[in-house]
Image 1 (cartoon, rainbow, N blue to C red):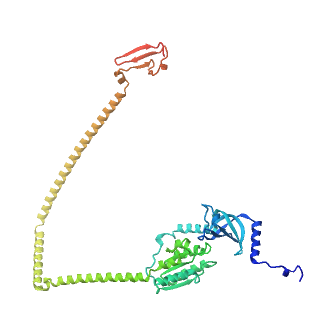
Image 2 (cartoon, one colour):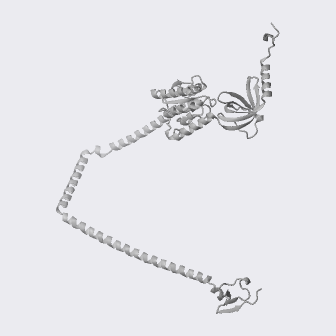
Image 3 (tube, rainbow, N blue to C red):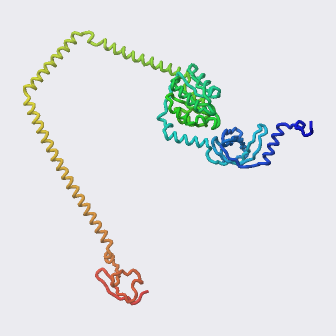
Length: 447
């Protein structure tokens, strides 16, 4: 082989190659700003945060270590659009290009988050989230439908809980893809199939946890409308407790996890059996009490004289009926033979009533007239007192009252009241008003 043959070159270990790639990235690119949509956020107990930053065609991993996060820094969330600043490097163990984040800024909601908020607002306006349209869950469903992936963790968790709580229920799985292209249409078809065949009493629709993209099938409008249109009560069980999807809002009940959905769909068999036993005890007690009541009534009926002297009672009833018949005949004869007397009595009663009403009305008119006169007198007195009070106030404010107290008022020839020396220069004719008359003078000097 020639010296230039590639087979003669020495091979280097993978770790050395990834180290070279890391150094190349850090030296040639270094620290830069990168913008994209945040997804797959992971925040372990160590305090570090790991997430994926992506756009329409590409994605890159990001790591934000606890020591690099300043107090009050924002917390990345799925669907958030971020601008991050950090070192472009390579994670040698995973051979992945990543950004070691030093700073992050909110660049607005991501595309998926915007679509989520827009659809949520529109469906809420239509009333699909209203509590009034929510259907109650059956207390003890005999048939439970599950719309989820047959290979995911959700179906295992649900079956485990249902088997433990009430093992003899009929469970029907409608297998679907829980994410990816076509998954939303598959979920809709499963919901519509269970409704059309009326195969179950209640259904659980959901999947296990994941990123916003993983859960997106349950944010599709067709899935939301299929759940809202379902005649069978639907429990939405998508993701973890912190995850919320459009399906959660339109479903009849939202469960924080698939396991919680299994606990909500049916109670424990032991609890139902205990309720049945208690109900049976209450029923037996009520029946015994009712039996004693009927027995007491029967004993009282047996002691009634009807069962001992029936002929005597019948004769007494016959006599009573005959007396009533005679009284009725007498009354009819009286009504037939003396109608004028009854009419006269009514006329007398009517006249007395009219006279009484007339006297009452006249007395009422007299009372009202006295009240009117009294109120007019009171009003006149009040107005007179008010006029006198105003007259006293007017007199008290009159300038002539000042003269009676020993003061005087000086006026110029044109009637102006002199208040200060500047108002009466030398040569001004003055008139001084006193209590018993006036004095005229001319100003010679001021000072």
